[in-house]
Length: 317
Image (cartoon, rainbow, N blue to C red; front, side, top):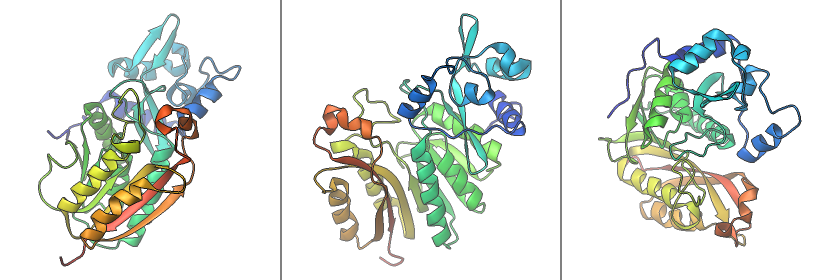
């Protein structure tokens, strides 16, 4: 099923345009940093739009004004807390665009994530596209979430058909809003488990999948498999089957490192080498989500690193 239609009067689209017109900007932090900032004296109640839609602080109706509040009500995106209200959505800025996603804290099973991994993924995508001068016809973003990767790819390659894929209908709904807000008319959100609901070859596959071991099994966070790499490996296997000759995979993910060993590389290298694919692999950040090392699932891990894999199928098999 494709999620194509976001009407011009959609309340979230109108809200995004209103916020953009007012110069709204917000850079999203890790949950732990967010918690620390919100816990500071004086931060219990919102005083600005950034407090409402970035920091997810409770607010008084008069702060946001009648127009913003009416749009929140129309979108069913606001909760009452006595005399205060809280937004169910957040807005984050990236590369001059605004993206709607889930509020803090992201505890719902169908929460839609946006955070520091998103910014690193965007950097990796820009770097990849700068090196790839091919005429890309079909691009797929697997596990698109709020759609930042798909939107940026669509804007960078306006001649390409970009498929934003996810199994989370809330993510697809947010992606549809974000794509229209950005003017990415060549982007199509589609419900798909990996590439199962997509036909035909692809020229570029991009992905920023969950990579943590989450005891609650939340889809936006849980990578599955051993040490959280299960979904990342499944994406590589899907790319091996579906990329067109000369096509590429850009995968941003996280890896638990053990005594200097990289179990993710040990798992994917035989797959790619066995198909004679060329690939580049690097660490973008050697230490992310360090607080997770206290969890039993990471009892033997030294660190969690953010990594980027770029793999290309031979032009002639």
